[in-house]
Length: 204
Image (cartoon, rainbow, N blue to C red; front, side, top):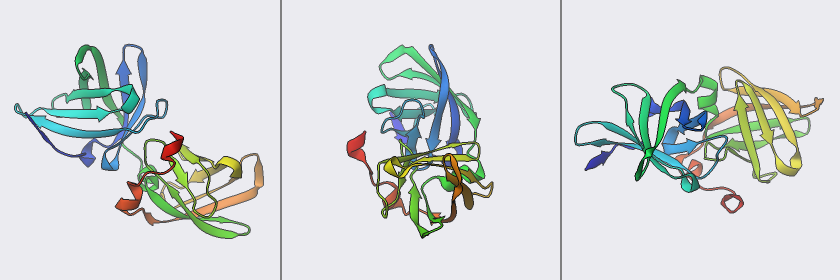
């Protein structure tokens, strides 16, 4: 038997995920969202504790399978396997916690500014990094490398911005057009019911 412990914040961050074929990044995000940049699928994570008080990390990775990994002592490293196949092993080790800026970007709303005015946008911390703008809708995504933020806004173009270390502002331009500037300031976190609502589900 095991008791479910939701998704403790102490385990949130970016991990090295290792299997016999290699290693790649995965993210344990707030609210139990599991994100794998190279292998995206609607995914979740949570932890349980078994009768021996050992903590287990449980991952439901949709088409990529379900995993049960045990915490190694009191560390942020885990070892385990594909559920039901102990020989199909997996390991995870914390690579880095989320930076202040990235943590504030996850599930946030911003005032996005250009020469003609401003409007609200959302950076969803779901399993696909959806970017949402109700004024100019399109199936869109964002990605962050260090402090360099890329927005792929469908038919509205691609944008490159620098996210300030504080996580409260960003500035940049339409890709390839430095004079076509964009700026944004953080308004706040998305409400839980908004952050957990599915967007563009039919597209994945």
